[in-house]
Length: 243
Length: 243
Image 1: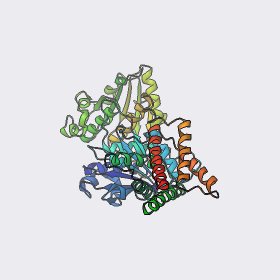
Image 2 (image 1 turned 60 degrees about the vertical axis):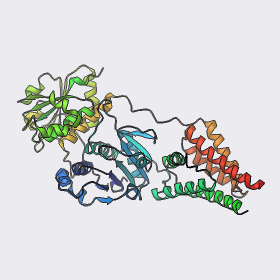
Image 3 (image 1 turned 120 degrees about the vertical axis):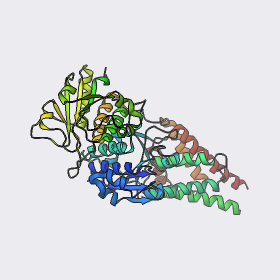
């Protein structure tokens, strides 16, 4: 069963409250009602309520977070949206394929987030590193400037269109975001233990390793196995230091 | 060849100039630039221009008509949009099917119109009688109130998806099988170096690690990064053996 309550739309650093209202209305027309706001410039705001029309209940129940990572904590699958692909590339889906992938994750009981960046700047590379996949909405190559509410509308529309599609067989569920974060930090600790993080290359290397880890939905058991190996590497290295 | 200049979006008796601007922007993001306005309540209007953002050229070139039939005069195929089907039923297409049908009419060199009614009342039965087919955008059965700009966005999006070739091909290509094999053997060597492969658990653990590695299409660069880390682990461990 597809449970749309497990899907949240996350608006990160939205500048214009009108766009928050438009997004709420766009969501509700497609039966999606869980909204998370990360550091909105102005919320609650009467402009948002006016633009939400009959979807003010979505605004009433919106969660407000100060950081993107706190908004994403319970999520198993996280999708970033943006107008263009970035250099540091996650796997890319177009909006239609994304509708299918999101529906399928929901059918497996996963918590899913779709993240939309600020109107002017979109998502930063740091934001995108929290995400597993990248949704591109194909647009006019000479004018791709979708309004934020429109982008939310298209993605929610595509998800809603897939809701009635037949169920796909469940694979094993990926571990929640928090476990993936712990794994990443464990990897970084291990790299320090083996003296592999030089100041010159640390940032870029950590970033690339994070992409490798987040790109793929590791299960809880797989994370457990990898962390067992990491612990053993650290132990062997420490022993040697003491030797 | 599909000529999008033969497609016009017709807004009939629009009340809010902001929605005209939003529609222009929605159209242009999907490469659709011919707009006809039938008896707009207020146009030209600075609110429309503000909401159009980078699509003010669409407003500059909009045709203004006093009646729907004059706006439709040159058209071969006319599609009516509305939230719900009417008693006076035309053949109904959903937005996705409509995108396909419209593209196919354009490919045959036809002039095509898609008509959107007033924000409050939609299209009247009299209006709908000018049209050949009815486009329904599937929505939440308890709240189907799409904003006019959003409805234009979804229909234009569906048309554009049928016109442009599939979105950019999948990111970076995965490394060939042989590189994946080498990575796996390198992992096994490292596990031996850190004394982690006990006879009792070796087979099962190696198998599970192989699944993790093969499950995901790592790129050549990602494999290179991981093998760099593995080499460093081995080096640190060997140093210690010799120490």
